[in-house]
Length: 380
Ligand SMILES: Cc1cc2nc3c(=O)[nH]c(=O)nc-3n(C[C@H](O)[C@H](O)[C@H](O)COP(=O)(O)OP(=O)(O)OC[C@H]3O[C@@H](n4cnc5c(N)ncnc54)[C@H](O)[C@@H]3O)c2cc1C
Image (cartoon, rainbow, N blue to C red; front, side, top):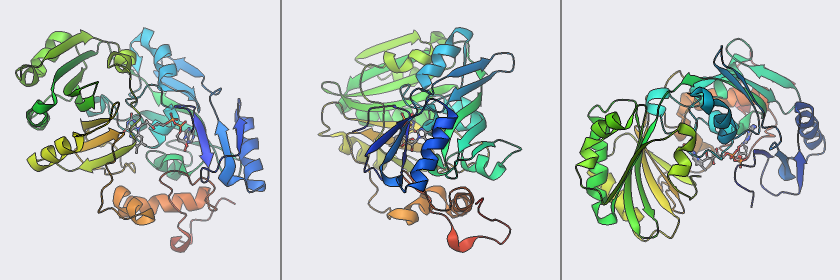
């Protein structure tokens, strides 16, 4: 099994045999070219852990990170200046994957996704070419890199906008699992009846070591304001409460040990009472260390290819399967996730930059061989 957050890129299916440890963009280009020439797609892993540099331009409020940098690497550098790019929930995760797959994060209701803060991506394509994708260069690719994941190449560096965030507060309220239906309904109503967008967080069902339900507030502001905004949750008489100013970089450690790497997810346009009951049922009998979480989603910015763009809620889980039995497999599933229009557009971009489908590990968008317009030609 691959270690967490190793910052790697897999080409093809996971029948691993070789690892290329890359330190420079030239290493990445050489590894990709070697893999393509020798048809090693199904057994080469690129380890980018050493490409974890972080360069800040504080005046311009810009951060450029290496393709193997983690959120922890970035926050260590930006925290002294009270600046950040909103990342995912797992600070040990790679920045590239979170941004390119448009993963959700703690403060997405207010600050958007990491993908929304992208200024440019330096990408090594299947042809071994280094391209820059931004608002003026390779704009079709830049669009696709806001949710299309690892389908188009290896990001050797990414540049993001930084946001000034003076204070964040974390509140964690805990009840026995029996309170879960009430806690979830109250949280849902709080979000759906106009809680300020500065309020992030969600509801967590976890065995730690006994089954409990937790309401988490991550708030862009101080503890007093947080307590006021989260008052409906405090009113449910939690067994324990924690409320303190917590730097964004320390949110995850403050929430305790455990894996924040979601392994499955399911999206919902709304979260009516029957879904609340179903979520509580799913939590019964969860093993130690497993968790289920309900996160509110922010309003999507731009026209990026984010999966389930219009969903208001997402349930994520670790150690629990959330597979939707109605979802078809393969490309039909991706069409449902991205929506037909964005899926087709992604497939055209794929066709242009990776026509032989060298990068095909996760959420693989197959090249749109049949539907090229005559004006779009593959780059090689
Ligand atoms: C279905 C699912 C949904 C998730 N949703 C969220 C979420 O919404 N919010 C959240 O915080 N966490 C989420 N996670 C958890 C976590 O953020 C991801 O697992 C994490 O992004 C993995 O990245 P990594 O680089 O640490 O892992 P790695 O195992 O190192 O990389 C995983 C994959 O990312 C790609 N990749 C990595 N680096 C690059 C690069 N430089 N260029 C191109 N591709 C690259 C490769 O395909 C690689 O195989 C989710 C996980 C899963 C499985």
